[in-house]
Amino acid sequence: MVSYAQNNANNPAYEKYKDLPAFNILMPDSSTIFNTGMIKEGRYSILMFFSPDCDHCHAATDSLVRHMDVLKSVQICMFSPATLSAISEFYNKKELKKYKNILAGKDYDMFFVKFFNISSLPAVVVYDKKKKFLNMYQGTMHMDNFLSNFK
Image (cartoon, rainbow, N blue to C red; front, side, top):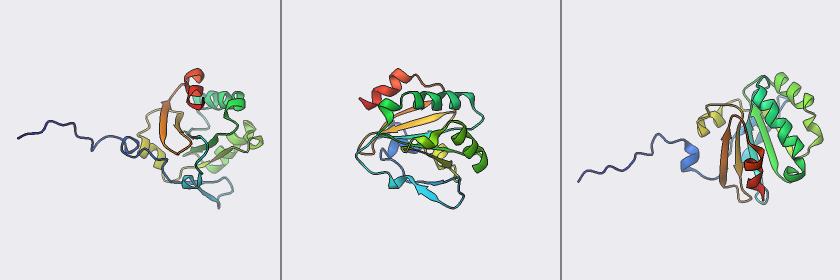
C-alpha cells in the first residue's frame, strides 16, 4: 500500500514543537546571556526578531510601547542579528529601559530565524501563559488582531 500523507519533514520547527523554545540572547553588555528557557509560566511572552534599521520594526516597537497598558505584564524579548552597539542604540532611542518587561539583545546563533523560518521583519511570536505557541506575525502588524491574543 502506498501512503500519500503529506511529509512534514520540511515544515518549520515551530509547527512541530509548540513549546516556547530555549535559546540564547546575548545582552548589550556583551557578557550576559539570557536564555529564553528562563521565561516562567504564568505570563504571556512575545519574541520579536527585529533590525535596528527596519522601518516596520520601528513602527512595531512604537505600537508595543503605545499599548503597554495591555502588555505591561507580558514578557517581551527583542533580539536582532545586528551589532550590540546598534541594538543598544535602538533600545535607548526607543527608551525601552523604562519598561521592566522588555529586554533586547543579539540572537548570535540566528536560532529564531531558523526555528521559525522567518522571511520578513519584524517577526513577532506570541506564547500563552503556559509557554505554548499562539500566533506568529511577520512584517506589518495589525494591532487590533495582535492585541486579541492577550484577552
